[in-house]
Length: 249
Ligand code: SAM
Image (cartoon, rainbow, N blue to C red; front, side, top):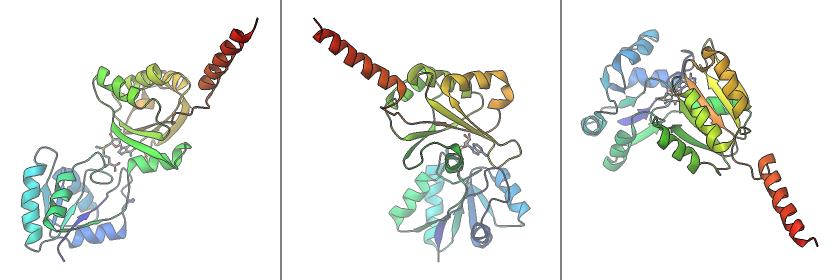
């Protein structure tokens, strides 16, 4: 039956694709992708010859209508992005929304996602987390964003570009202090995969020591705010001392 299939693709290691994803890409009438040349490499690796169709952020709304028309006429479509799970900091929202409005079935396949992969190896609490996508590029907006997350108790997960990693760590230190634990996961599933965990101030020094440490694709994670952390405790102790002092003769 005609349906829109959301198909995750590898985030580096080409073997990270499910049999079901490959079967789906083989069987659908059309693959909607961010970049047809990029997706062509994956398809040729797996000898899949399905027609591709470009759907990126700039034309998504307009192209979605055309895809919905095809779906309503009985064609099946797979949506992929350049890497990982479509719609997670990637195009697809308008298309899925339009399909739901039009009564077209949407079937999501589970698969690779850099945020979840990073989180599962970070050693930070994972019972609750907040995925924040990319931090704003402009300094003021970035600081405001971090400020709004200052007291967030959940583990924070950001996507980060190598060019901006240092600036982001500086901004995190400015707002959250030296001690907040950061984890930098880079090049996941690839040859130079590294996952490094340090308090923020030490992370800045570690990154500054070797520019290779900020290269490639990066997930930046931040421990959630803990009211019982040392900073808070000493503030509490100081408050209590001040009160006691007031009571003394
Ligand atoms: N849809 C993708 C997913 O499910 O992870 C994310 C797309 S987003 C446009 C691209 C960003 O994801 C990169 O800038 C980087 O922050 C992160 N990313 C993607 N692949 C990664 C990898 N192999 N290692 C670390 N981060 C990665």
